Length: 233
Image 1 (cartoon, rainbow, N blue to C red):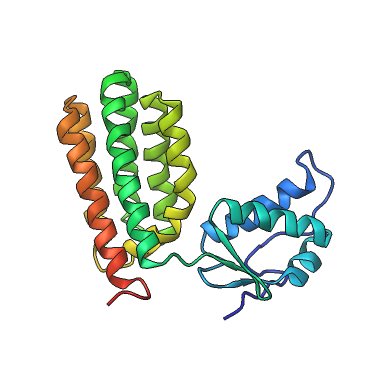
Image 2: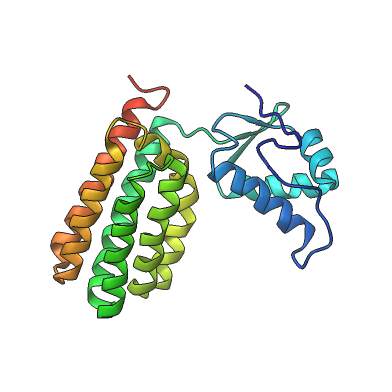
């Protein structure tokens, strides 16, 4: 079904006004946030006219923003049919998870080697923050935002610009799949258990164990996501 954008539609923004950020950047961020928060879902069409009317910007600005999102892999532009939120194929999803597992296991090793004791404690605290949120219970999108705190601390403590840049380049595309891997029954408590084990291995400064646990965590997410992704049997 096509995405309908009205006053309280997926973009959930008012017309663009005079603020510090350039207009194109505001439009880009609004559409990107709607995709990453799953207000615009994989496969849904981006209707230029409705975005223009809601945000009060030019067609050229909207098209520039969509072009950037296409370069990030969040939007797919089909000739004669327009733009849609990217719906990863099973093959693409498998590759993304494999890349993510390799990168994150390396990030974990760098964190163990380079992070301060305070950063290690901060990392463990983010896992307990995840655990605390389970009592509510959170929506999957809210839980992902809390889990993002773990990765922010992990990347900062790893002190590797190349790894951060590589991981950030695929994180948005992976996020389109993460909500699928978390949609199965009882997955959120299991995620907390897995992340706590990773944090414990990091706290004990055991890089091999921490990297293995991270790879296993991502492998489980991949199996769950691929098991329910359209196009898989």
